[in-house]
Image (cartoon, rainbow, N blue to C red):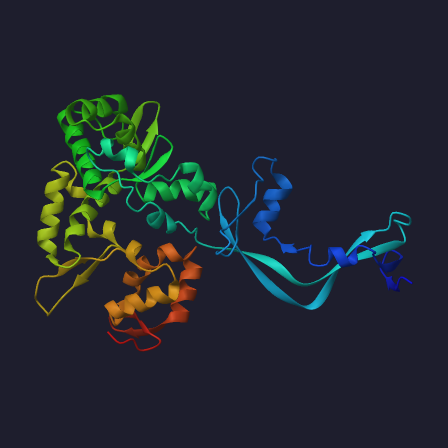
Length: 376
């Protein structure tokens, strides 16, 4: 005999019955709680813009991606069970059948896209000057393959390729060699001056042609590089001056990971590379999160060391260990730049600082030290 339960609602009385399909349905339902921004997308957007994707390798925690953002999928245990019911076919207005009983819900939390895997997957696939003959023997990882496997939204994935300086050549992903990228940027700056072109509206065809004809740089490569460092529209390139200057500064810094360089010497080299026209745009603030500034004693000239945040662990706990092994205490305005890529916003960054660091205030401002002791 089928068990029968009565429940009272504000509308009418319903009979709850265990469905004959209860056994086979058990465990087949999941309750997903949508944040307000996702509800709005689903309720108001067209079929195309409301696309949602679940991404993740069997060894990874699943994420849900919209076209713009990535969300972690987390299980939350309920204090009260939730019944999944469906109307009875024979008595849809008075009887419902219990299909399953849920003890948890799935919640969605915004997270940083997991783009760090690209550097591992694209190892030994670097694009450098004159390596066209090696392409046939190189390992390959396609744009479409990465797009489906990397846990990131479409917009975050495209931005990630740009920020990591990854070329798309014949459908394959190839990170460009840093030295070759610096060479291309230096050439672009030189030709802007020698050809009397405005960096705010430079003809793309003229620049890619001269790079191809005089330096054998493939047009597809130079065009992608230009798109990374400015806006491309109607055949014209509006250069992002700060982005170009910054990349050339990083190119110099890469030689000083283990041997510090004096601040004045570094600035002199940097200005020399960018040329007279753009030397006024050189400022160390462009390189925040990529270097350490050290003063050995009062009155001595500061020295700089290459210390890129991109080379630090992506796990927050491991990153703080690395940071506090490098320095016992950090100023707030210094450490925050080394946390930007592991926190979705300033609120989450502050939560990480509260969890992993202790704040101290003195006459110089706010400092952060480790909550636990680390042995150097």
